[in-house]
Length: 306
Image 1 (cartoon, rainbow, N blue to C red):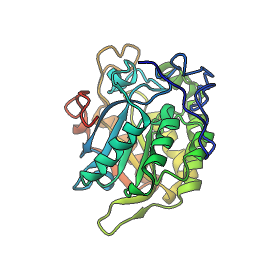
Image 2: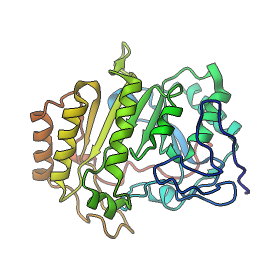
Image 3: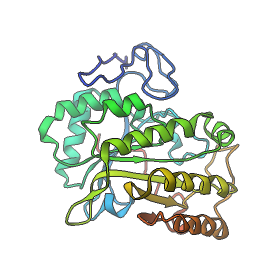
Image 4: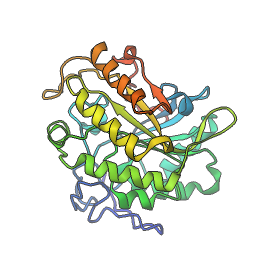
């Protein structure tokens, strides 16, 4: 299928004719060929369904209306969603079809609309959300790897209620090795500060569901607890109670992930980071159980909901 470039939006969203939607800023004309992300101008999706395995304030009892976008501007070696992030498995949709996917999820009664890995498809997401207009009533979540361009975050400000970024690495050598992004922390920390400026303190409804705010995820990597603790120290100094923190221990070695850690996290490693989390006063959020590691919760990329 031929991809056709989408215009700049009224909100000032960067376009795809000279793409700079993510920090890679590959300046590819994505109407003619794919960018670094592996995606052209039209949105590509792998799955859209009610997801019950997010944080409790996201999934709740009705599920999070999760939309998995294909391609990726980061492409971590250890990615659990490798078939869609690296391989581009998914279905090319027209923007009007993407809007229908959003509305169909809302009709299922989900708590929110959860846009997973949206960065490189922000232009299409913005247009689809505009197409939905005031028919879309649920909070909209920007669920990214944290490697976001500040200009793109600003352009999405009027659309996004909840920012759910990862903060994966601080050490530039580590992020260079595992994601070919030595500037990861510089870019991700700047994006998170912009998200905080927009969302302010977390807001919950009467059922404890997050309605507005920033929730930062950090996955502890085997053999790299020092980097994790440095990230938590940055959060304590720069975020404090203005954000929720989700510490994750689910790291699982994946096939074809040569160059990334090839073992699971040990209890001793995880306890060391958890102790630092509480010592630093980052008690507003969640600590994942180590038992979450494994492949059982990775979705099947079967095009559900498309």
